[in-house]
Length: 245
Image (cartoon, rainbow, N blue to C red):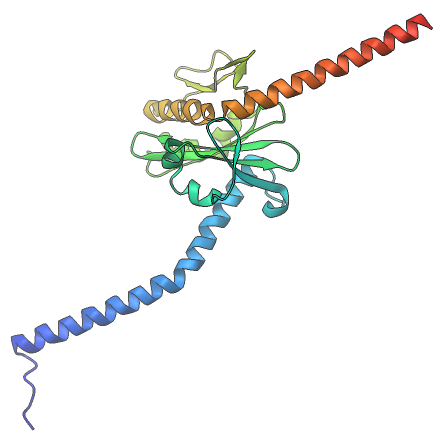
C-alpha cells in the first residue's frame, strides 16, 4: 500500500477543506439548534422590559399585557406579529404599522426607536391612564459612551422621566432633554452631562416615536374628558334636584 504523504500540498489542501466543511456543518447544526432558545430569550427580554416600564416586573406578561398593532389612524390591525415588528421598529413605523402594549389597568406602553451618538437607541415608554403622564421608561443602546451617553440605560436616569407629561393642554409637546438643566419641570429632563448628542437623540426619539400614536392618545383623552364632563353634569343635576327639594 502506498504511504500517504501528509506533507504534500495536495494532502494539506484536502485535509483543510474537509476540516472546514466539518466545522461549518457543526456550527450550522449548533446555530439551528440554539435558534429557538435565542428567540425565546429575546422575546422574554422584550416582555420584561415592557413590564419594567410599568414597574410591574412581578406580573405575568401574558396575563397583564395585551399586544396590538395599530394603523396610522390608531385602528387595530389584525393578523400581524407584534414582536416581529419590534425587530425592525423603524421599518414598521415606515410601513404605517405601530405596535402598542396595553396593561390590564388601562396604562399603555409605546415602543420607541432612534439614533444616539454612536448607534441605535431604543426603549419603551409607559403612560398612565390619562395618556399624558409618563409612568416609566426603559431605554437601551448599542454603543453609547460609558459614563456619558450610556447613562440613558440606568435606572437612576430613567427615573427622572416619571411624572413628566407629554401634552400641554391639547398640544403634544413630548419630553425634552435640556442641556444645562430642565426649566419646564412638567415636560423637561436634565440632559446628560457630556452626552449632548445622545440627549438630543433621545429627545428626537421620544417626539417622533410617540407622535405616531397621537390618533390613539388623543382619542382616549377626548373620551376621558367627555366621561368627566358627563359626570360633572350628573353631579350638578343631582345638586339642583336636592336644592329644589
